[in-house]
Amino acid sequence: MSNQDHLDLLLQGLEVWNKFRRTQPTVRPDLRNADLSGYDFTRMDFSRCDLTGTDLSDAYLLRANLEEADLTGANLTEADVIEANLLKATLTNATLVMVDLSGTGLIRANLAGADLSKANLTRASLPWGNLQGCRLVQTNLKMADLREADLTGSDLSEANLQDASLTGAVFQRANLQGAKNVSLEYLGKARTLFQASLDPPLHEDIEKNYPHLLTQP
Image (cartoon, rainbow, N blue to C red; front, side, top):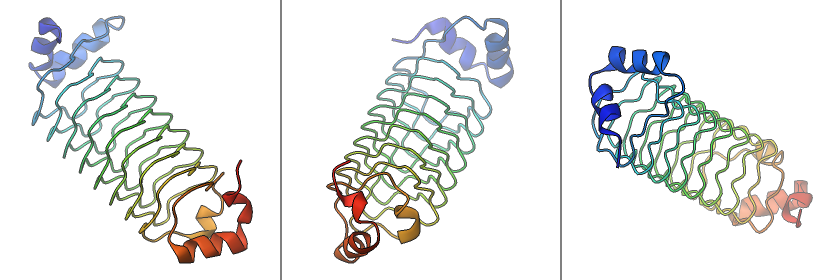
């Protein structure tokens, strides 16, 4: 259960909350399991906050600071998290269906087991991120930065990978069947595609041009 004092401060709005964060930098706000769906948290400072199990569905988190926040099991369905800071944030097993994360920084974020189906990650930065076992079905990853990201066992079926940076990315046992706008050149820069599920034409192209990606790393 969340700390009621922290929750009361949050609901007083941007000025009161961000002043609290500035003047009490050692306090880690406890907002666990709170129902914050639909609220406008634009530019709010949630850095290092405990938001495990919190309902943030339909919330507005534009340019919010969620650096190192713990969002384990949180619900961000259809939330607007545009150009936010999620550096080193934990989002394991979070529900992010149809969330808008366009332009958001998720560098070294932990998204293992998260559901990002139909999410918008256009221009999102995910280098060195942990996306093991993620659902990325029909997710828009146009121009996303996935360098050195670990997508082991993730489901990218029907995802849009147009101009996504894939250098050093791990796609071991990932499902890429039906993925759209996949650049052979960009995919060829991945670290591994061992045991990945690929459409037959793409598999043939990889086998011909980058056979090392299909062997056990």
